[in-house]
Length: 390
Image 1: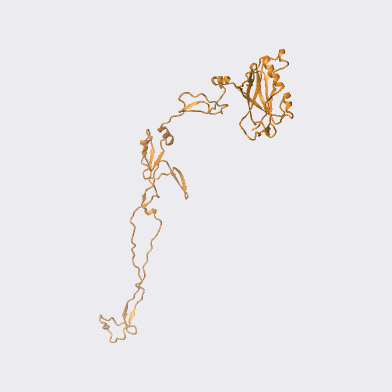
Image 2: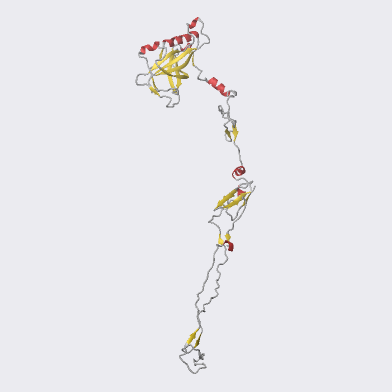
């Protein structure tokens, strides 16, 4: 915090106070000039007409009377607000000058001594080296700051003071503004097509605290009170599907709506056209199809064949008894006694016929299977499905 010396009233300030008392016109405090220097000689302050190096101005924001034991001396507290919003370079606040003028509608009679209403340096105060305040540039955003000073007028009983209201509003004007119904008639809220130029919050009426809201167009609007059915109509319009693993019945929990159980035992399939492996399938909403279990038909079985074979075992021949030279003598009987017609019996070899006697057998192939149906459903989890009909 900067440490400033007491304010010094300049010669120009003393003349202004005397002129105010003589002409019975008030002193108006206009502003405070703020700089980063100080006088080289403190004794020269009395003759100063401006601060040494002005950087910014502070707007007078408040003027209050300070109680003083000396009734003839009026002591005032003067406050000015300032900011760094225009500073391109920061500086050390080391000097402040209070600027004022005498208010009048005319400055023509001889009593004014050539004064024409100009603002003059009436008071000045400064800091010593190393006791300044640093005010950064606008690159470091800051809230508005205040500078204060105490100012004494010895003949206060005959001098009236007030602040310049060009940048301030007194309480009377402010209260009148609040009650003026036409004070903000130029304020325009937004519409569905245009942004508002200036927003303004109108006075709410009694009872609007709980069920009204302030619209972007600047008007108080009542919050829409929707029923449960209104909400269900938005979330589940007629034709919607509601699924749940619970036992709740939407006909009972949502009064005014009508539901029916839907698609019992069926998997829901999205409507539209779908192509797989070169085949296009089209599904229409509401159509049904498919089956839980299926028995294959002959046409649905993969193409296949059966084969069978048998051995050719069984080749044989026929023969007759002959002599060694192959001459047949006839057959033996069952006791192997010669039964031929000749008188000689040689070794009786058995002559043989051809062995071309291979032959085929008939084969029968039996059937199997029970004509049962196979499971045709994917793994599933059962839920309750409802469709809204009204």
